[in-house]
Structure formats: C-alpha cells, structure tokens
Length: 86
Image (cartoon, rainbow, N blue to C red; front, side, top):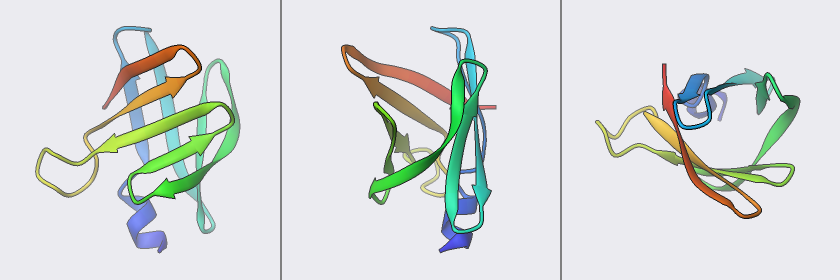
C-alpha cells in the first residue's frame, strides 16, 4: 500500500487561493500540511478521495492515469478549489 500512497506525495499549489499543500507518506499513511493547515493524516474514503478534518480532497488521475496531477478541495461551503501538482 505504501507504494500506492507514494503516488500522491508532493506539493500542490492553488493559484485561486495562493496556497501550497504538501502531502507526504509517513509510515502507512498520507499526511497533509500547509501554511495555514495543521499537519494531519489523510483518511481514505475511496481510492482517490481522502478526508482531513473538515476537508475532502478528490485527486484527479485523468492526465496519464498514473500519479494524480491535481486535487480539488471541499470544505463546508468551499467547493472545487483546484490544487495542481508542482
């Protein structure tokens, strides 16, 4: 499973909100961190959807089908904020 998780790891940037989130593998989990986001685990919901606190991240593998190229965030009334892999 750690091999699969490694595909998600990296830095993702949103021009819309001028923010960068980092996703890293720690043991057998993914961890999310950012400037205004405390480091917390990403809990799997489906193969490409994870939750972190009140946020839901939907990863997109449509470009090439391998590692995700981006994800969108939903958090309360905020929806579809796109973060692209750097």
